[in-house]
Image (tube, rainbow, N blue to C red; front, side):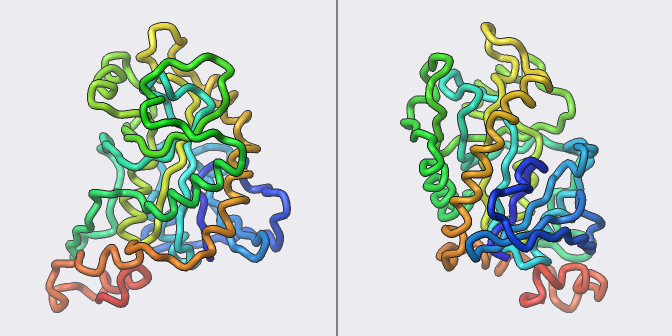
Length: 301
């Protein structure tokens, strides 16, 4: 399997997708959010998983992120594109723009963010949390799909309503626990930290994808200005849904154009991210832990 997409159900009906199947996958870490939808487009294989489940029934804190990422790994996925709605913390990143996130600030507290533990200790490098090669391929696909490349300093400049949809290369994503949206004080704090977007899911997915040795990048769909902007109405569910629905077709087109690029051989080091991570003595690793981690680290254990 070439590419895994974590997002919403609106992406399942890619035009031209063939051999569409639903696969129910069980993992050592429990059940994923739902069945994985797999298919083929122009010879490239892709798997979709709605992170919140069908009907959006799982809150960000209820998602079994470990099971979701492990299920993609079990299917043979090598690259993961996470598509999610975010709030903007910058005037120059208005609703409708895209941000290819390249850094995270993780403020979550109530979710499992590692495959290690229970008898096995491991630490992976996370200084650069996304795969630059995959991010570059997504950027190419987005530009082909009609987005304009934003300049590096555009995010700090006000932009007129109705301006062309733009792609911002790079940006820091604050991952909050939720499910409540930010207070104004929190929103201003995150702006003061230099963050660019805020959401509730991508940092957790990025950490687990790195541990699973999968290439990962996050495509953030800006839907609102959070609540820091005094001239804008604070974020609401209705506003998010309205912008997301308007961008579903664009997101599909990006995935469609990404697939041939995702078929290229991996030239990054993501597939060896855990090669030196495990520090537990092999003799001390319980048999149950070896079996639980077999798909992920069998070649190291």
